[in-house]
Length: 600
Image 1 (cartoon, one colour):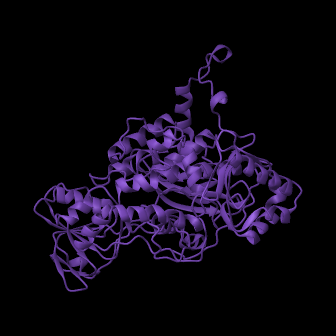
Image 2 (cartoon, helix red, strand yellow; image 1 turned 90 degrees about the vertical axis):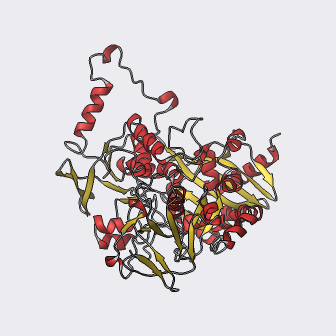
Image 3 (cartoon, one colour; image 1 turned 30 degrees about the horizontal axis):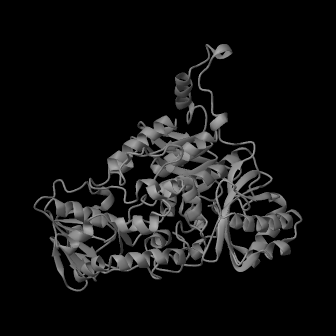
């Protein structure tokens, strides 16, 4: 039975908010919020991804933006039942602005607004063609004799980047660049993706043999085309690579493979980028208006420097270069690191009877995949969630509706349950010498990912190999040096080695901007990723959103896009809307532009 009382309670608040905002009575609007309130906005009010916390900051945002935005028609979404539980009333909402149709989510505490999510769903007059407005495709009657679809597509591929310029140049053809390319295609924004690998999906195909997605299929869909119902829960890397290649083709993306981006610079006067790429052995100059670095979190390998590396007689490679266990038989392998890649590589080596030692320099959060799916992801992304009417799109909005300032508290109960249910598993790991943590505030895996994009492993089998001793473990000490045939730790232990694999992660995304554009531009932008939580590897000040991701930066015309498959899917929608608006000349005054912190 639907909780109609919950919907009525929300509608009463929305109606009052509608009146207050329509009359520009900001004090009346603020009276509808609790003191510790949060308004998270994706473009609709701020042309930014921005969370304003507390009444004073909400007032500032409304003072700055209300006259331009002209919000109205705030209503409960009648197709989605509102709920009330544990003192919180919540539900999906709809609203309009002068430029867009909006959608969001609201939570009431004691009858007042506690959290409010407002997102731009579509620009009025620039809606994506879908449903009743989908393109006809066939050319009948008076259109007979005109170029066919195949001929038009061939001409587009031949001309874009040669005789015509893309409005958006996307550097990086992994899942992030491909998802954004698909969004822009549907918005009619000329976009070109350039990728150093030859084919879409090669960034997956070229990784170590055992790599699989650690996130389940329900979490990983791309825009417009979901994985089929018989797709495996955890897709192998080559299967993902083939899917991305298929997706790029059927979504008609303009993709230049085997193309290396050499240099980029921005001309403020013309507001145009000049980007030099090398393709088929010759340099080509592109001049897009917008440049998107979709190189992802794995763009710039972080290879540590240790004394003696030049004397080491064996093989040294970063995890991104490691092909897998082939050719490793009879060798002694030392893997520096203890996060996802380190565990995957160690597991594949151990399962092929290779002598492998993991060097764990600092504590790592571990969540068993089954437990993570059941308690953390399952309520939003699972077959059970789908049966309960939670589509991927609804799940994305529900997760986005929790301000990052509150997310740790929302996450703790799930990870407390995981720690309790898997207590024996964790004890066995600690008995093996593994150093465990649940984050600085016990909030678990997702907060570690959002804050630092490292420090965790989703267990798909490697932990048991550590418990059983098949993966040797050297924990609690950092690396002091390499000798000709060993790795020496600071505590004096010496690990014989023929191969050293650095599973030491990747640098900040703006490191690639420094290489491609300039150090000045990288410093102007500042740190990319992290919330400013003032926890390890996520220094303050507090930002409340992912720094410089999917939103305007201090460098005009420069954008960063990436993250996991779910983030690439969800946030590509908002990045595409920002780029579409700029192409159409729609004013996009940005409220709360990200400040520069922690230069590269």
